[in-house]
Image (cartoon, rainbow, N blue to C red; front, side, top):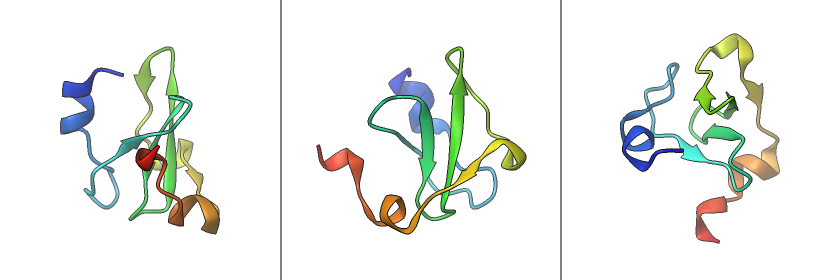
Length: 65
């Protein structure tokens, strides 16, 4: 995912910053507790397409790796 694009994208529900998942397949909103899929390199920022994070995922910070 392009760093410049990631810097301007926010969660459509909470407007909080998004972070790229460790495997690069989702954009994570820790504040909103949701993970938005990335399909064919395009982020799908629709609440209806997002999955809910587990408690462990919400608390675990992948960016620390």
